[in-house]
Image 1 (cartoon, rainbow, N blue to C red):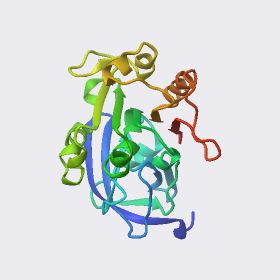
Image 2: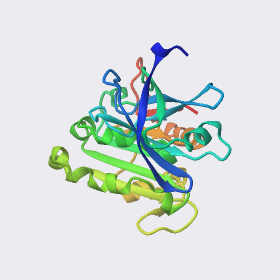
Image 3: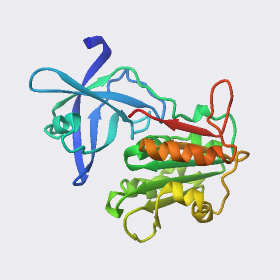
Image 4: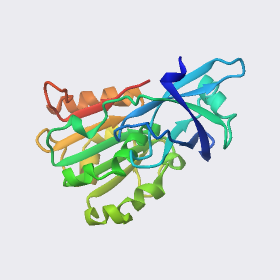
Length: 256
């Protein structure tokens, strides 16, 4: 890939959350533009000079002067193996072009915004929630975040602090955070998977609101099986994918 396609950025921080989850923050090129919810392709140079590339959604908002990403350690994975060797000050390549359609302009209307995430699929929703648009456009926002273990529920401090931010204070009360843990009971979390919680009504009960094609706009990001199963469940409720030629109730991201 030619140098014109990417910029060379520096790692500002690497934060290990659990043995298999970490966040990384890099410098941001002044010319790099993205919409909240989009992803970038990151590159790490290997010892032999070749570069490994992977797609990562931005956690940071389009207004931040840095870029932040949320990653899972893939045992034996080529990219995270290389990434784990990097420290603060080391170089990371960032493609100049941001990608992805998990953005709020996918929806032309709607009363309630549902953000359904598993694992590192939380990242684009944190970017969206750090901006104004979702808070201004929707009456209620439900952030639904599922992990296998309670310790894997990341970014709790950021989530709980959103409505305390000065610029979002007027929207306090709009956000409902619904965590789910699938493999163990966990205080304050529903037990099970997002798909089960939709099927048996547990999710709507926790939200105090129904998922409906009239009022609900749903964004889904996470492992491909969850995305596919959730789309099938919502389609059975006449909640279809939102396309440019046919606005709908559902938007997904798949970059696996």
